[in-house]
Length: 403
Ligand code: CTP
Image (cartoon, rainbow, N blue to C red; front, side, top):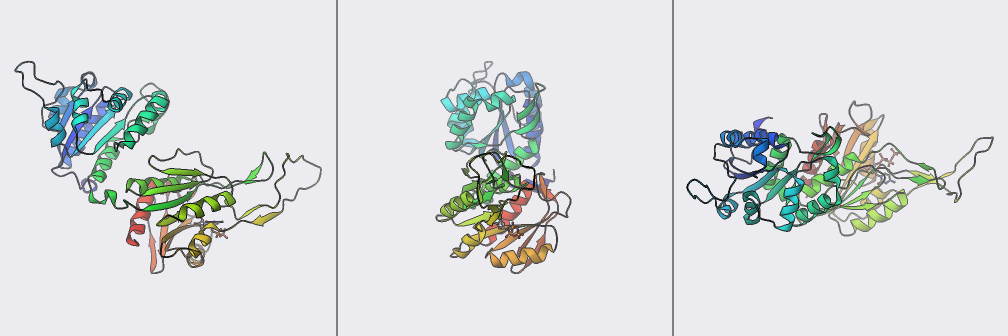
């Protein structure tokens, strides 16, 4: 990773807590990244963590002796968790096992890592690592929600192959991601949207034909969810008005589930009443069946025509009642892209519009990447192909310039 990406760690005190998970081996790389970025790192390990990675490795990489016990049995020297808690600018527990998360919630203090956590006055980050069923268990989910409510930051685990051989969510986030997470947390930028409220529309609407069929589109919701995640990360309150997607609600985001364009219209208008702005990322149906059959339509021999009527344009409605608030739109086009995007920018009263061209490889629906251009009244900026979360970061950077 390019060193300039971690620019807020210099001389910061990081207390790295390592618990007994197979992902403890990744703590070595994480420690090295933090130290290389200029942080001073002290490592506190649970007794079980020592079985997964040796104190010698962690001591060498952190350039500090490892802390495991409350005192040194050889000479009685006391490892003061209170001092450690005060020393740290950030306590980072990576990997954090289900057991440690549960103890943090209950205030159990049976090892030095936990007593340090209870004494810490600084931001605390946990990077959960466990098997998919342990992670999905209501107990673990509830514990994470409680910690989050108490202000603990969660570096979300990724999906993928787990040590058990199963595949799913629970794999500790990669060391680079965790280091960046801590770097962001310690940067000035981190709470730039504190006190602001944004509405994000995301996903596809569903227009029912009869009780079993509907008209919809290919939107996965990934771009809108990435935007909601980024806004929340920068401290904003987020109302995510979400059509159909298979995605989990990002932590710290208030999701309002809707199905049809009409439901999305009502929810978005209501949420916008108290908002500072909105990002219109949903793929909203422009037409809906004029009549919804209350019983399943049975097939006949001939053709079937379904009469469609126009839906209401949510973005245009918010644009018409903007009153100086911010409005960001999206345009997904297949031809005459810039022309159409500029027309939408004017017509819907957007501050800027994010143009996706389906002609660009890696852009648009379903994938994890996107290639967009940001167009406002003064010009156009073409961004390279990036992950959707990187694109979200750039869009929110631009949004902040309008505040
Ligand atoms: N949009 C909306 N409500 C609608 C239709 C669109 O809020 N009923 C928003 C989208 O979320 C997007 C922008 O308007 O931010 C442009 O959407 P798009 O579907 O590209 O444009 P349309 O106005 O529907 O034009 P067309 O389908 O003819 O391209």
